[in-house]
Image (tube, rainbow, N blue to C red; front, top):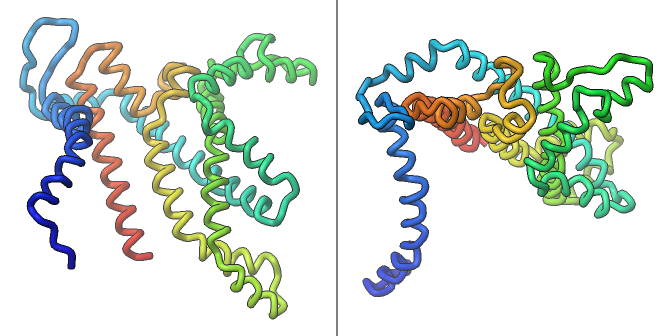
Length: 291
């Protein structure tokens, strides 16, 4: 066992001090302040001091018609995008893992959208799905003899368009992670399996997928948490509309805080989102311990 001297320990603390200061100023203190502010009624546009109201902000937020809609939209978005992204990512990773020609080229093509700006990608999609006949998707529909569609102004189509954007943009990341998991599987296992008359489907279901469980678990948890925090594509494409059709928990937080200036309600929404993500993190730790 290595025992550090007091001078060495002081050096360690000095090295982590800048990171600790940044964390305290920009993460820890704002988080604590948000918890405190969620118990007060406070409007940024007034000069009145915050008024303590206890859990009234939480009750008001939960009883409002927008919160159930935002919660439902977030859950639907998560339940659709996460499984589809993982299935498509695994499928493409399996294809690329089989000595595919120009594999590096395809990997770059898939990964470029992921590293691109979400704002830029959202603007491109707004042009693709423009409600007028100048939109590329509506042009295609007109060429096929169909009527133009108000993609982002239709309450039934707006959220699916946002889901499609997220699937396309994040697919490259999922492929890369799954490809790394596939490359980590020892080739000897497949060589041993090839000695018996076993089909490719059985190799996939009995060898590949079980050995990819850590990778799948990692993607499932991280992508679920990220999906609950979706904001940019919604803000750029629909601003939460039409109505509450695409409003999510984070867009609700933004609307309450920076449009209505009700910082108490915005902080309450942030605390509720924190509790949800904390529960997901606890589930993650439980699944990892069972692994």
